[in-house]
Image 1 (cartoon, helix red, strand yellow):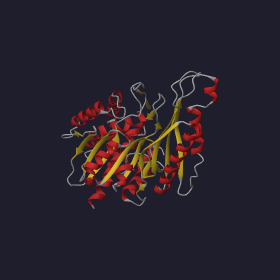
Image 2 (cartoon, rainbow, N blue to C red):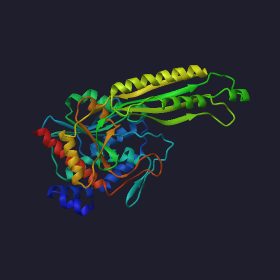
Image 3 (cartoon, helix red, strand yellow):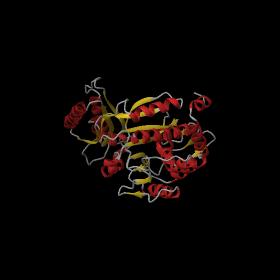
Image 4 (cartoon, rainbow, N blue to C red):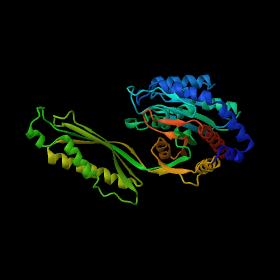
Length: 391
């Protein structure tokens, strides 16, 4: 839908909000640029957390704070004891070897991690100034939260820590994602991740025809992959297994002594997940014994299935707002930190801010123009949730 048609559907206050949001674009892009300049690999987010706290202070947040995991927490005071959390994660999935410089063009911003999710952090930093500019006040307290330890082995630990300490006082969670505008997540699947490693115990690294003929860690791990994809997975409840990464070997003329895979299993049913985990363990043991190799299966990141109903006020409001802003809502399962809050029966939803392409390559980018509607979506949703909590 063209912007002109969208604006016609907005109320007079909403049109004013959009104009003020557009006026903060330079500030938003500045916050994005400064955020991207600070390395924040998972488990090493302290410097970025300190920057976020300083920006909270500059925007008028009184006494922003952090915790032992370096989560950055700010609070916009309301007039009641209700609390709405607006959150995103601050860490990136890549290390300092990745070029983290960003390039801002007329229509897009390019750079590693821009869409996943440095732009969400930038919006979180800019939100206090946006709300001041549009003169919006809330009955509820708005808790601004930038979490650490999101990616990989971090396994949402920052969010877990926050929910453990403050969960009893949280009434709703709105989690910000970079892309793609119109996507809404309000249910999660049962999930587990697993790193499977195959190691050959052989101190003699000399390459011989006999050793090569005798097999390698790569061949063993390949057999494990074949076996994993033979596990009978039901269509209902829907269950799937995905090998996301394969690694191993050293060079052409050396028998591979170590190889590994990283996999993820998703299911709509927690009991099915338990069965699949046990099946994976058995197959790893049997194949390792067959080849005389050491095979280890390290499971982590286990989450249970949980969800809201599409009839829940938080979801209904989010859906209606997305439609008002000209997008076709795309409801998908979430692999984000609302997994943690939903498991604690806290109403939670993911919203996406713009369009673009994710990843850690130079092709990763966000589109600038849709950001105005993405932020307006957030403001409208906060107003709607605040009104619902006050009823």
